[in-house]
Length: 319
Length: 257
Image 1 (cartoon, rainbow over the protein chains, first blue to last red):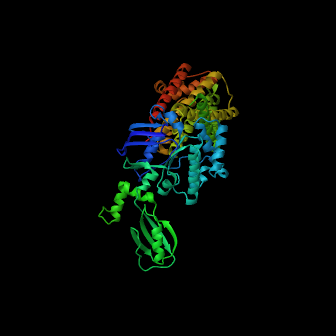
Image 2 (cartoon, each protein chain N blue to C red):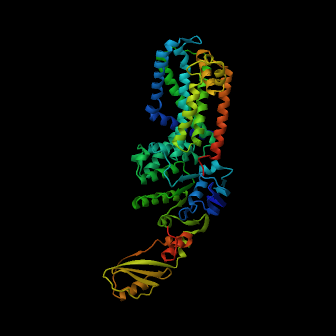
Image 3 (tube, chains in turn cyan, orange):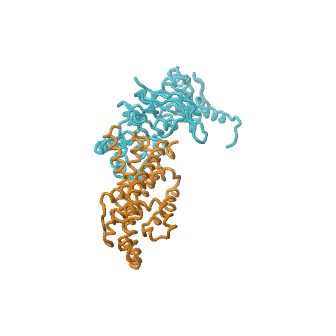
């Protein structure tokens, strides 16, 4: 099957001399839900900008569903829907008008655009705001408006650059569900996000870019399997004075009622609970301490390593 | 895009542009009508009565074509420069840039919007003029051709201005320091034959003179320059500015990183 995205040797140097991309090779399979991660300034938005024809590449080859960006730009554009990081609609236009116009720019007749806009605004919970001026919407509603606009021409590839930035958790989960359904219906999705929990929850494959280079590209499962240990937080029924001895990699008492245990990923939890019962320790609840992907992300990116150094108390330049 | 899809895309951009200036008609359509009425009262009724006839026409009737065309020029230019720069400033120009619309079609959509505003407001001003002056028509074809080409030319000029503009100040520089002087010195209120020989020669360098006189010929049948020169200049200007605008948008000047 033709790849949704095939990028070879992609470089970008801006006029001010900043090298945003230093030779990226990346393939995204058709139908995938793909996370493109990286620290701020890593090159994610530049990559998305090139794919969506908002940024000119310096060198390299980009193909979208087999269409070459240099030779078949029209076909590439028709295949893509983009949700950018910044709001980029006319705040003085009615919500419905923005979506209908975008359908028109892709060549759809106005009646068809109106019908599709109605469906999408309904699905994204914006039906009652369709006649409101876009500037009157809340931040979360504006994000959903941009998703509706990006989908109105039914693209085969949806690119979302930080789609849930500044969106509250309840709404974010609603958007996740919507995006899962869009993906299940056959649309390939590429997502950048700073919420690593979002990438872990939604995406099947992942790439991490750092300083303009690809530092990781694998399936989410394979990546997470590389983690050797997990940390669990146990809420205790009775307070403890000292951390008990348990058959795990590490035990810490963060406060008298909270115990943190590090456990090897390939070990079952039964031994831990047996030891806790034997010691007479009653556990009220248990949760995974940190987002697992976050730990990997930090270890794979240069800035993550630098942050870890600083946390360790290593000397560093004052800001 | 298929021809049908291209038509839908063009129609969408044109409708969007017409809705934009119609929504703010108090800012876009009404002021030129009031300004023109004031011109007629001051220059036509009060001062014009003392001037007498120009080229065999009452002064009031003589200045009508120039005032209408001045409106077409300023309105078509203002529409595209403000719309395109506003879209650039608010970044919703990206809605067009990510779409498969060819560059030529994007230019055509914006220009058609500018032409629509220029001609609608020009028609409104013509209606106002009918209250003060006797409207004449020498050639309907020339009237439509000159008005249309003028609106296209200055719409393209507005688009190019917007591409280069980096602030709202840049949007007003050309209309204030270039267009207004050229228009006022372009024979709207007088015939160049009334000027001394040296200034007559200088005036012939002003392109607006040819455009105003082309329109005056279409209405009154008199002109300081040949109608062929007027139509030729307009046609060449439209082609030249379209190619320039096409090059700028295709190269992503001021739009793409």
